[in-house]
Structure formats: C-alpha cells, structure tokens
Length: 364
View 1 (spheres, rainbow, N blue to C red):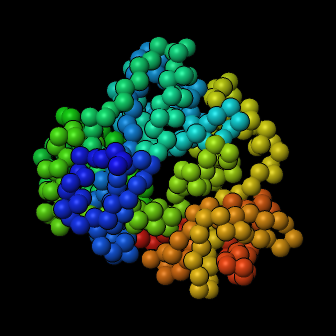
View 2: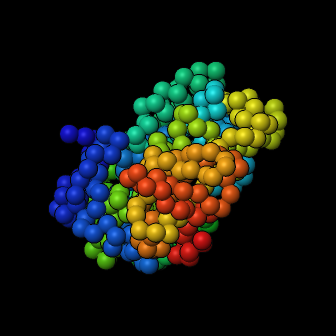
C-alpha cells in the first residue's frame, strides 16, 4: 500500500482506477482517459496533485541560498507571488529535480515557496538540507496542504463561482505564473497541461469539501493518464523520463531556465554546464511525430541518417492530433527527419519543435 492523499476514499467512490505513482496511490483515470484529456482541452477538469511536495524557504539568507541551489535566478522574481521554473542540479550538471518557486513576502524581505516532484521528495529534501548548512535559512515542508490543479480554458471562470468574493477577485486578477495567498489558501495561475488554469493549495482538512464543490459544479475529475498526454502535447518534461541526473538542462530543452548572469553566481553545477555549453555538441531534446500507424514509447531507438542515434524519452498517442507523438533525445546535428524502430521495423519521423499543442491550438 502506498501513501494516500486526503482524497483517496473519494477517488474510490468516484470510480477511479488507482495505480502506484512514485509511492503514492493515485487515480489513473475515472473511466475514459481520452475523454478526460479532451475535457481539459475544451472545457476544464480537476486533478488531485496533493502528492507533490511543498517546501517553504525563509530566513535572512533565503535568496542567496536559492541562488546557489538553483540554475535559474530567484533574483528575477521582482513581484510578490511571481513564479519561476528551474532545475536543481548536481555538480555534474545533471538534473536532480525540476520545480516551481514562488516569491512570498516582498523583494526586500523575501521568502519563497517551492513545489517539487513527489517521486523525488526524499532525495530533494536531503539535498536541500545538506546545502543549507552555510546559510541562515529555514526549510519547512508543508505536509499540511492539499493541492488541486483545475485546468482548461474555463477553469478560472468556473472555479471563481465556487469561492468567496475575495478569492474570486484574486483568481481574476492573477497573471500567468503568479500565485498569491488568501487566508490559509494559496492560489496560483500555473499548471502542467498547456492550458490556462489554477493550482490551489489549501489546508488538508478542507480538501474533500472543496473537491466535492468542484465536482458538484460539473467540473470533471481527471487522472494521471490524461495529465501525462496533456503535458506531452504541451512539450512539458517529465522528471525521470525526459530529464534525470545523467542529463543536463542543455540536453533537455531547458537551456532557457539557466540564468548565466550575473557571472559570479556560482550555482551548483555551473562549471560542468559551462563546459557543455562551450563544447556545443550536447544532444537535443526534440519533438517527433509518427505520420504512420503505430505508437511511440520511451526507449525506442531513433536513427538519424548520416548523424547517429538517439532515443524516445516520452511517447504516446495524442488525442488532440490523432497520431503518435514523442519527445526524443537526438544528436545535435539532427535535421527535420529521422526514423524510429518499432518491433524490429523502421518508420519515418518528422522532427519538430518540442511543443505540439498549447492553449487548444495545434503548433506543428
């Protein structure tokens, strides 16, 4: 038996198929994974993501501590509640985890809230604590929170109808990639689907009642299966597949998350990453589309004529596109065509930018 969120019994009552995910018993789907996927693209749906780990960072050295810990620079956060996406690297430049960090408090007296992956919780917390000893900083895991994601083009409007006027105003005023508190709740305009929407942290004791409010208002429950196809269509990486401790941000389509300036900011992994950057021959993470029948899956071999080989890191059938898509790590000189091996046969691939669908629009 795995760990359970406060909504475990409710998921069972709603007919969820439960699976193990990073040591947690989580809903894979509530009936049709494909219909759940379409529901988020066309309207909205609610995910229980309470398995994610929330860590508050505060203290006199909160900013310099995170500037050392993260490849992106929290000094870029100049507005209360503004969020930043970053990788946390090891000394070799490999990705320990990817995370979101919010600015709490003010720019002058900053505190921060981090949201990291469930499967990497123990590793992340150990790494963060080990590197905190030289700083005046306090780390507080917020296991008292439940976390919901309400995603889709109608997510904010529908959620605003179910909360207090103050929270409704906050939902309407939030800018993309910003999160702010209201009482014990923290509401952010972020997500992992390529659609607009919200991620809401609230006291665990209020989770069942609010989830019931959402479902009672006609907002569909969505499982991890649709969450995976939604994020893949959006070209969003999954830790442990598209990036890990053996792959750097430069080989994971995350170069944009590395803040090289100011040059004196010695974040962990910088020297190794600098060497990779200067060499310029690191692999690329690209999008690929299978134009013929078949399904792309992780670890299938990708061949680029005259260049070399790579592999699929994440692949699936795309409900929006009606064909199979994937992210693939391939040689740097890969052009717009490649081949994939499926059951001993080679099939042609179209190589594209690693983002297929965003905000309901097909990008390829």
